[in-house]
Length: 184
Image (cartoon, rainbow, N blue to C red; front, side):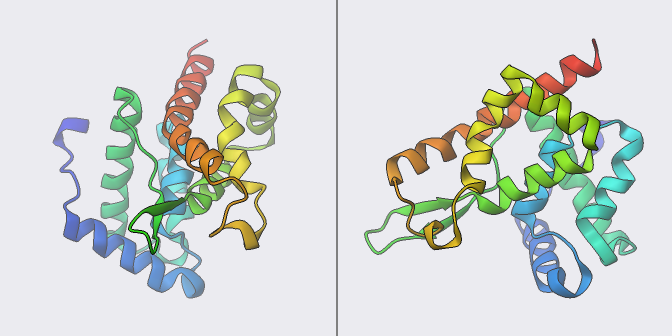
């Protein structure tokens, strides 16, 4: 079935992002970077939870079948990337005066932890109580420790970049950890 799903084109991805951002406050939906983190954390959830996951991301836009289809296809691509271990988190980039960019992974990390909470207290405690999983969570949690004043000027930019570079491997490792636990 995964092969039959058409990948989102750039225009469709932009349309999904724009609708979510424009309606975020009024409709309670997640912007795409937050949704990407949320859907990554919940990737190993049973297929029966798919509708609830899409509802949570879309908020009051959940009845919009066009957006729902785009989000479903977005999630399907994300799942395939995690399965193949060819995954990268959707992280916003801040252009700098020197021509470089600074990764801003806060939304993705917040979405990831919202996904962990969505899975329920038992699953969250199981994740946090496991040494391997806890190690994989470290870069995700590190960005949630920043205070707002540090978002655009991290205290240690090299460590910030290094932790941002680890997010994809952490997400793949956590997905594999969830899968192993589900199949155990």
